[in-house]
Image 1 (tube, rainbow, N blue to C red):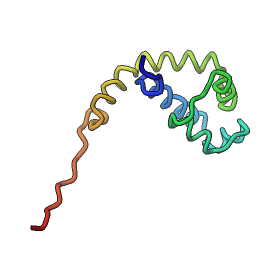
Image 2 (cartoon, rainbow, N blue to C red):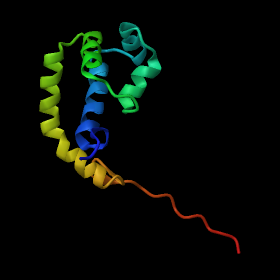
Image 3 (cartoon, helix red, strand yellow):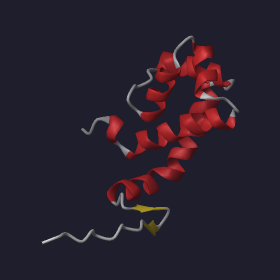
Image 4 (cartoon, rainbow, N blue to C red):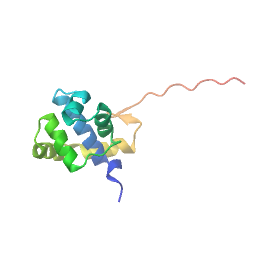
Length: 111
């Protein structure tokens, strides 16, 4: 079984916790203060370098002013909508939002 931190579903989760914070009008520093943690801790959680367990997620939701049950219900809805799109994005990382990224022209080498 693939580790969950490397799945499209976990990518949706990371985007969701960040967007939920932004929608609440909070900075990483605001959340850190409410958690009694550092801004670095919040950043690492949002980037997936540090996993949140259930107890930490419950505290995180409290810091955002959202009930844990409401957070999970909204996450499940988002997961159902976005997981397949994230799978496609992860399979083809050179494309974002359906558009190919422009490549820089190759540099000429001297002979």
